[in-house]
Image (cartoon, rainbow, N blue to C red; front, side, top):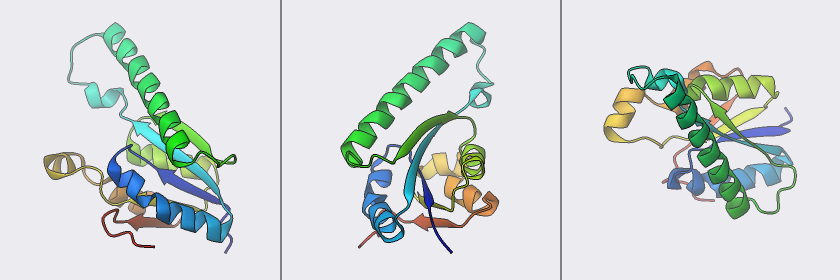
Length: 150
């Protein structure tokens, strides 16, 4: 089995940063191309709010701009020398978008953290890692960011 493309979904938390040494190790050993993605919640997450389409359109634009700026900062701060790296900001359900991106881009393996949301957020929204493991058509490696030791 040859691993040429690795997908690393990130949420810009410290959890994502703690996994980077593992990602670098994996890339070095496989010589693979790294794909970074961040998923913004789509409009369905705000369906209970009666603010009107114009409000959401403006809000969506601000979300995308903020996420794109955060992605640029993350790439420059954590992967400044990786010319072959691909980074994208997507909108929608995190699980669905990660799985779709992996399929559309012929990703060989997804490497992601097991901890992002905590407490009540995890209970209400579930585990993105768990959903990706269950739904992805490629292998998924989950990494506990608090136990990474390379």
